[in-house]
Image (tube, rainbow, N blue to C red; front, side, top):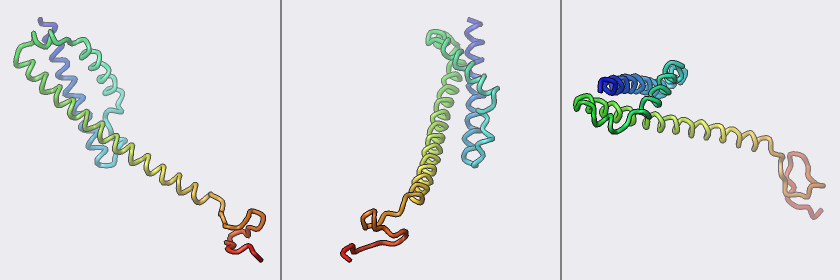
Length: 137
C-alpha cells in the first residue's frame, strides 16, 4: 500500500511538472518564441517518457485503493494535464497548418513565375513576350 501511495504521489508530481512545461510551451508559441519551448529540453522529454511508463503501470485497482484525498488530487492533476495537452496539440496543429499554407503559397508563386509564357499562336509562330491574336496573315 505504501508503494502505491508513493507511486501516485510521483505521478502527481510528474503530471504537475509536465503541465507546467506544456503551459510554458503554449506561452512561448503565443509570444512567437518557439525556441523557448520547455518540452524541447531533454530533461522534460525524459520526464515525459518516465511518466508514460509509470502511468501505464498504474492500474485502476491501485487508483481505487488510494486514499480519497490523494485519489482526488491525482484525478484533478490528470484532468488538467489532459486539457493542457489537448490545447497544446491544437495550437501546434494550427501553427503547422499555417506554415504549410505559407510554404504552399510561396511554392505556387515560384511555379507561376517560372512557368513559360503561353500565347495563343501555334508554337512555331510564337513571338517571345508578345501575344498573337490573329494568325491569318
